[in-house]
Image (cartoon, rainbow over all chains, first blue to last red; front, side, top):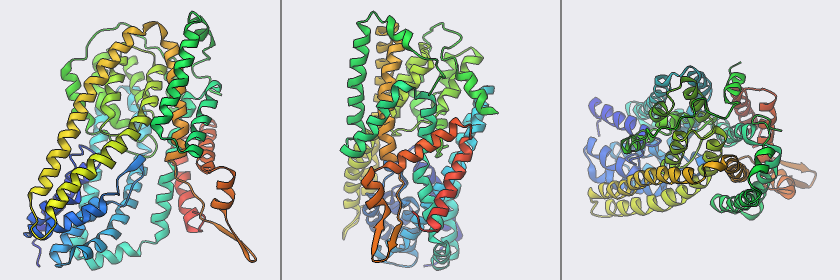
Length: 260
Length: 282
């Protein structure tokens, strides 16, 4: 079917909105199921939209951001898949095949956005020192605008220029770049943990950190179970010292910034 | 350098103005729920949700800390690494705001944040992403599929999902705040011990998170004549699974101590990722 410019722009607008919703607000209008209804309505074929959206929804079901790891981005996958199912009259399964490469490419780009925002955190530190509360707010609004704008762009281009040329571009990006960004994204939480350790880790706590690591590594204990176990030790420690009239614990406290 | 100035400000964990005034109203709790919807607006790999978290509690921090220096100090502490489940964050928010309102020392507040964020992240994943979402979305999808697709499918999904979503948020916000207030008044004398206890839980959890959240595996296979050795399976996992994530965290920790800035560490990590993938190590 022919897509009018208005329709293209409306789908782009939808992509902007759900680009924000997938990380913030989280009404979950970004799920392919909902996108199927909305994009189907925009492009004038609700029936196909619903079926394709529901099919993509089932594909996307397992792809959730567990423990912060980014899965293939089925938000983009949903918009592109549903759009081309209607535009090119594809069966739902073929729409999934078109959606997946875009979903993987978008995942790589999300990694890039999350990386690009890291240096800004040091600007934010400075604003904190200067008490500039409105700058903190502005940074967050800019973040959301970036998410939305990126998803709008990634949706607009293939619909405007046609899926085949867009797919060729996506596939021309060497796999090692997207893969490498993915690897880096998987390693990066180490920096955040290291920053926490720099502040919190005193000699007396090293054993607890190692114990937590060992319990998860060898015994596959869940983080909740681990926290409860940590709480048991902490409780014992708390009351054992508490019975000592509380004085000893205070004296033991090392210099706040002492570290190791 | 900015880094050293941050350390200088945070060195003394006590707030300058120690007068405790009750300023947080039920309306503030509601408005914090709305603001917490932007928790991941500035999500990034270095601090994750920290800046969005700060955005959420900022108006209340301003009400609590009328002393300019204290406000800066509090803001800086809340800019530190933070990551939890975006729905269950409101529990921690309630707890932390109650502690700020009572001018608890920053070491205690930080330890409580770190001790709660990991477990709530795990509960949230299991509860929301692996239970609530599949059930509601599955129901909606089953209505929208089939020979006779029903447009009500997506709507049913949204209504069911968000009823529970916002129920959780508002409930946990109140629960967290009032739990915090109660806990603080009964444990006033024992701040140091509480901080110590929370640090034990916090660091145990951080150890576990290092093992579970950092993804680093070597794909390299060394071929020696007839034999081939998969480094990850036969060497690293044989010594200790997850030893690479631990080693990388300790390397980052060491470099931070050597005053390398986190930005440098991020760029370093990207280069390692790209180069490693390029030559086939990962």
